[in-house]
Amino acid sequence: MNESVFVTQKMTSSFADGWHIWGWEVSLYLFLGGLTAGILILSAMSLLKKKEELPVSSKLAILWAPIFLSLGMFFLFLDLTNKINVLRFYMTFHVTSVMSWGSWILLVIYPVSILLLLSVMQEGYPGIYKFIRKNLEPLVHGKLLKVFDLLVDFSIKKRDAIAKIAIPSGIALGIYTGILLSAFNARPLWNSAILGPLFLVSGISTGTAFVLLLSSGKERKLLLSVDSKLILTEIFILFLFFIGQITGGAQRRDAVMILFKGDILAPIFWIFVVFTGLLLPLILEWLEERGIEVPQKLQPLFVLAGGLALRIVLVEGAFILRELSTKALL
Image (cartoon, rainbow, N blue to C red; front, side):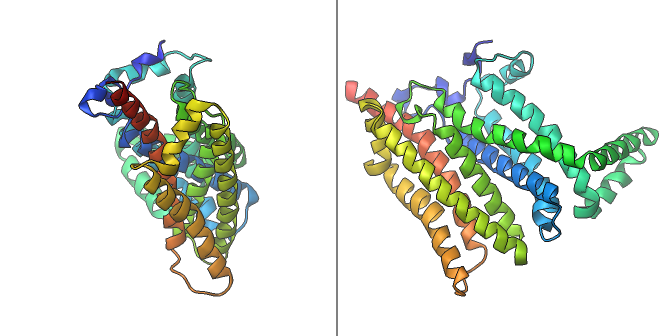
């Protein structure tokens, strides 16, 4: 199967009409995919540790993994021109196709995240658990309820095994969101092997930030420390990305300059990615560690905003460069 069947609406639009090849739908898809990966990895690791002080990480957060992933797939679907072609990715597998890998990774993530949710539903979401059982009972003479109960029992018994599968699955999803861009070698801004690790660490950081929004007490303090380490790692990887681009030839150097001094994206990059998404959360944690009271929701909200902004500037940046190059030739 040729990857050209999997094109977005903006891919088929003319630059002369002012369209970007990919837009906000794809940026949101990449953001929500990374967020899902982060939640899945964090929840699975918390379950394996079996620590009572991690109730949100180990029981409550996992509900959001399939929800966010479904939202991300919905936004991507909105951007497809030939929507029926998406089914072709699940009829075959091509080792050399990045999109084929991504499709099958998503196919694994869905059942793993749902089984992980079922394994903790009785403890984490007893109301939802009772609601589902109550509404399944009258259907098909109770057969659907029996299937549901079997899945719950299986998930509980195999919880550790499912969690161990969820971790590499989440890592694969997080890396894939970056490799999806870096596979397009014709886009100098994306031509970097660092994008995979960058998007993975950013995804785990945003996933941790989302769980922070729901956490309190000891769990919140622990997650704050974890997220700060992830942010520092992300800053280091981002630094390596820029070094690689600057030293990778004239095209890559010129491409990355749009984030440093471009009229359109540079302000977004420096204000929302660097300051709001990376530096400000570190400052807020530093203040909190020294007993200075700060609003508890600010730090994770800033991290989430920065994670989304990172994907927007990288996606949009490649096509703004293309438009500028096209106009220069006219």
